[in-house]
Image (cartoon, rainbow, N blue to C red; front, side, top):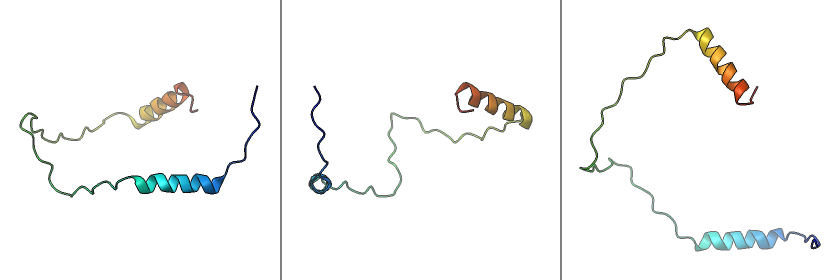
Amino acid sequence: MESAPRKLDEEALDAAIADILSQEEPTPVMEAGPVPLRPEFPVLQPQEPLVMQADPGLSKVLRQKWAQLSGAA
């Protein structure tokens, strides 16, 4: 058996959401600065960007095929 639908009291819902949000503690704002290094992690050097030397027509065909296989086209 289904119960009868009830009308949504939007004002009460808004008040409940506002009450919950006001109870949450504000998160501290992180200061912008260097991230401290940890000795257990190695220092990695940035990699050179990969340059694609592929045919632009091939790229277009591959993107179209990917779209077809994923159902987007």
